[in-house]
Length: 307
Image (cartoon, rainbow, N blue to C red; front, side):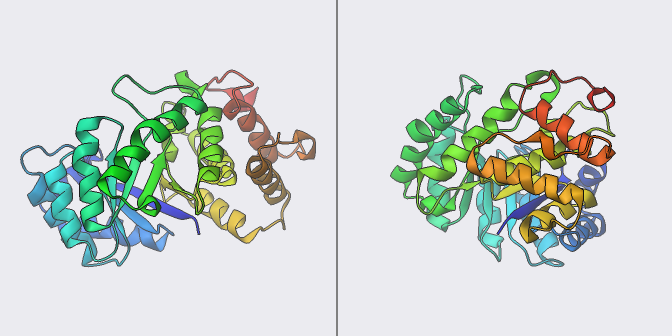
């Protein structure tokens, strides 16, 4: 079962920041309820670093959200003390968001994940930077993250691997590598490791009318490759409808048939056949053009949908 992780409660949102600073429950609870109503299965609570007030902020935020919704929470902060406070309060099995392959961070967060038997997102990122290739991303997982998690006693089924989606606006070469890494990682273990990413990263910097298209098509490709969760905007109805379409294998529309063909191609590691696309249909044409961008076959430009 695919899980959409709602991203709307994040400190970079000025209204959320003001609500947290003013301890205004109404705004936070409204966002929590609406995200769940729109289909979010998990809610991400991004409080930022919060070096001093982290524990108190996390305590207030977790309790505030759990007063109105009953879903798992993703505790999103670099403050380990705040994470531990949140872990003690969560009513459903939460997610620690996140650790990378930095030994100092792994040495703190993996033991927490093991102690509380909770999920943890692991980023395929070393202090030396983020590699481009799928093989290098897999290498960080195999050489650094999994051994450290095992040493700390983390249940492999509590691990969510994040191969780190990057924007096509300047780092386009990463897009197909994340899909390839997802496909490979999902084949590595039985049962397979969970996978996730920040979906909207792929469209950062793109025009507002282009971002939803990039997000939707990339979601189809990632789900096909085996990703079983993403951090997303539940208020994007077309995005949520696309998840439902894929889960229900709904081929009742021409666009649905295209999405399912793309999903199936990514699920088998094969090339998507664009001959099934009716380029006179604007929605189908958007998908075909976007696939080429995400495969790094056509150089991204802000106006690529109009070319």
